[in-house]
Length: 107
Length: 123
View (tube, rainbow over the protein chains, first blue to last red):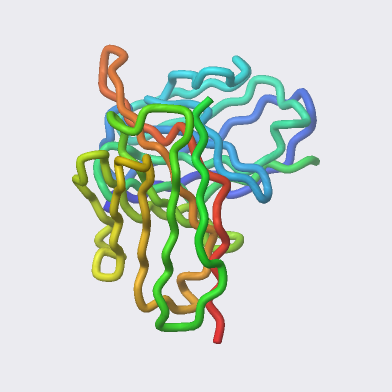
């Protein structure tokens, strides 16, 4: 299985901050990397697919980058609705696997 | 607007079998991979397996011996059975739509999710 490792596991930030989360794959996955946002009690929502493509309806403050084994998700200016847990997920090969999550909470 | 609606038992005793169904409303059933994903309380996400409209299946090897995913394309529904459940299977179970495409290179993602069903396994 391909292991996905996110860092940090949690971070505290303020509205307006620039926030970055990294995700590393245990082997190369090309651009088969997706990012999801999950709020408490809700299903995950797709934010970014194919490493850097913005899902329809997602604000442009979210950007993804990377390829191969190293990826990142950046929120350019954190908004109140962005406090949530973020997961990366590889779709290069089954079993599809997720990172352990990064919880973004209010400082 | 496409929606996934899921249902099934939420409380089981150890050794019983989990049975969940997910229905697809308002959109095409073919051309996608219909997926089950679970999340233990306070933990991360685990992919269980997927099926397409013609019945091709992929399972997570870690669960393969206990999992059966099936499809009823005539009803736009797919189902999950997980046998011999234990406390370790306590989790929220989500159905989701797997889609692929091409934007100069291939991509694959889970773009639509059900609301989730909490399974509690307790004697």
